[in-house]
Image 1 (cartoon, rainbow, N blue to C red):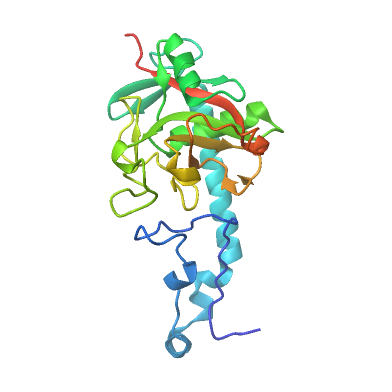
Image 2 (tube, rainbow, N blue to C red):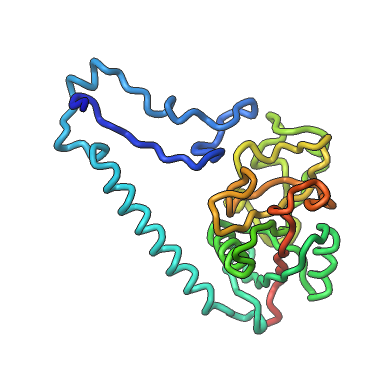
Length: 256
C-alpha cells in the first residue's frame, strides 16, 4: 500500500453533478480538477497521522449519520408545524412571509391541469424556497407512493427569453426559470439534476418537476432534484413510466 500520499475517496452518485459548472459550456465538473496534487510537494509535507483524509471512511460515516439525524429532526418539525395554515396544510417561513403547502396525488396529469386543481383549492402550484421545502415534498411523496417512483409538478416556468435555447451564458441553471407562486424567491430551491435544465426535445421543456423515489435516481435523474420537462409531456406514451407524474404541490398564503 502507498504510504506517501493521502488517499481520497470521492463517492459520486452516477450522473450526479458534484460541483456546479462554472460556465454554460461545462457539464459536470471533473472532481479530479479540484483535488490535483503535486506528488513531490506532497511527499515533503505529508504527515499521515495528522491527515484527516487518511480516515476518510470514518469521516464520511460520521457526516452521513449527522445528516440523516438532521433530516429526521427537520421532518419531525415539519409534521408538527401548521402555523396559521388551515388543517392539512404545512406552514413554511419564507422571506416573503408565511406560506402554506399541501401535496395532492393524481397520476399522469399535465402541468395546466395541476395548476387548475390548485386554483380550485384557492392556491397555486407552489415553488420551492429552499432545500428544507424540497426535502419535505420529496420525502412525503416518496413515502406515499412507495414502492413506485415518479415526478411532482412544482410552480416553475421557463422565462420567455430562454424558451428557444438550452444552457447558455444568458440562460443558466439560475436564470432560465422563474417561480410562479409569487412567494418563493432566490435560487436556493433550484436544485437541478445533472446537466439540467437542458430544454431538450426540440426546445419544448418550459415546465419543471421534482423526482420522487425510494432509490437514489430514476432513469438517470436524481431523487429530490429538478428536471425541466414539457408542460404536457406524456411519460407513459414516451416509455418513461417510472417517471410518470404522481403528485403536485399547491401553495397559498394563510388567511389570518
